[in-house]
Length: 221
Image (cartoon, rainbow, N blue to C red; front, side, top):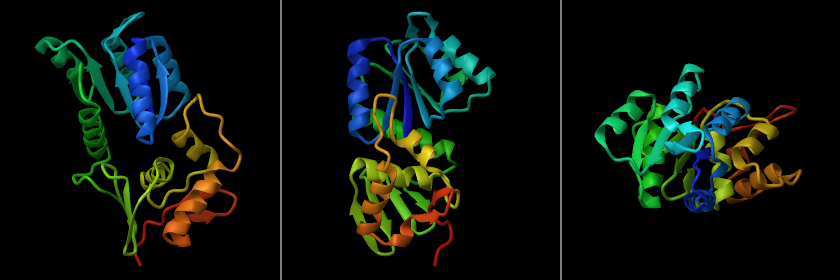
């Protein structure tokens, strides 16, 4: 999962960047509303974490601009402003959730999962794609009677594919979802992750579509 973090406070930004990355997410961190708009125009994100007090203006204005441009990425506002009018303005302006600083990372993680479930039209905590079931809170994957706790990048790979069951993601698309701007991606990184996942389960858990990419089949045997 790829997240855009918009936060101008260096200490908070570094802390969130590290915590989210350690949880298996690819994080792009920007510090202004302008850079946020540029990033969303040029990249695809699963989620946006947006501070309101930005050096080049209000995060609320940035949010309104994104929604006017039909950028439909889920947004969680993260801010120290806890007054009711600002909360209402944020939610009415297009945010999916509103979290007041300081907050625990466990709460942020739970809210991220909840927002993504709503955005994807799911009710339960699990992500199901064909015969694959993922539990984001535990990094557990179940497939044909086998359940494993996966390392963060292997889990992130399956999560990216499960987000589009039956759909095909190219190598470049998977790299975009698994690695942020600061990571140098080895040429065979995706293939290595798929190899490790197949060894834990079965070759059919991730299928190759020759010349196009990889998919998690959406049918159940």
